[in-house]
Amino acid sequence: MEDLQFALGEGPCLDASRDGRPVLLPDVADSAARWPGFVPAVLNAGVGAVFALPLQVGGIRLGVLDLYRETPGRLTDGELARALLYADAAVVVLLHLQGQMPPGDGLHPQLADSWGNRPEIHHATGIITVQAGVGLTDALLLLRTHAFAAEQSILDVARDVVARRLRFDLDPNDNE
Image 1 (spheres, rainbow, N blue to C red):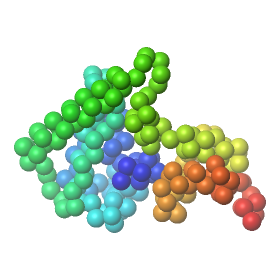
Image 2: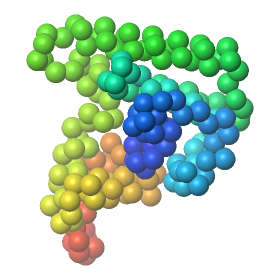
Image 3: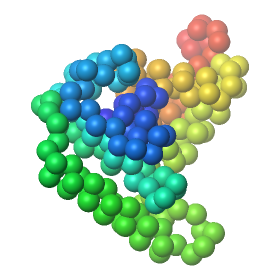
């Protein structure tokens, strides 16, 4: 589901990260107007409810904990309290991992492997800017769109671009 949200550029995880507050969707089907690409795909995958909880320390956003349920339904007060405790625990783990790194050495290897930090995606985006003659934002959009249309992960598509198995030339005959 995270790959799908990253590929589409929309979804509760991205909104929770951007806004710094929980996004609670007890019935995903009710959100089709908000996320027209995400909702049909998520329903097709058998997800009925999504609860996205930002992981942050003050104004510093570390990520999002996404919880999924097959059937629609609200979290009870007790379930929401436990979910928030899990989010707090995840923040402690993230901070502990990063605290193991010497200052200036970058992210802990287990943290650097997130979708947003995949060098293949950034590299492929740069390649697409040259191939298609577009800016970085449009190149990432082309990458995301192709991944969604091909029902592939964005990382797999990015690896194909980097390996020169897939091109995004302006002239469609150049791929032949």
